[in-house]
Image (tube, rainbow, N blue to C red; front, side, top):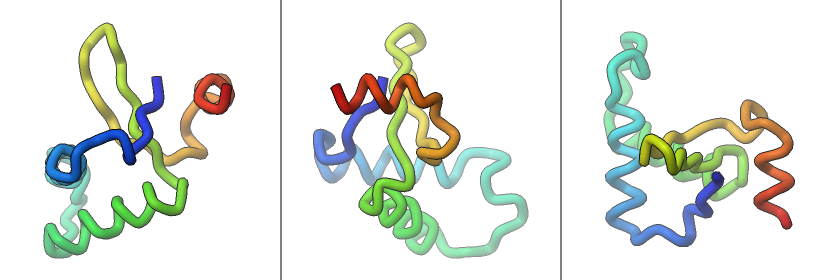
Length: 79
């Protein structure tokens, strides 16, 4: 299930993005400041290049590039 970023409270969205960019394995030695990484993800969400994916079974949220999301999920979101 895709969750529009606009439905999240600003603080909730920021915490979700911060959690994503600070997860082990996401920095790959990148020394970019946290604020810059958060801004990049926020821009990708704003430009509709990234989406928030929610799995109701596990109650987990993930951020993903839109191109990596199954097309049927995107079609469900548009319906």
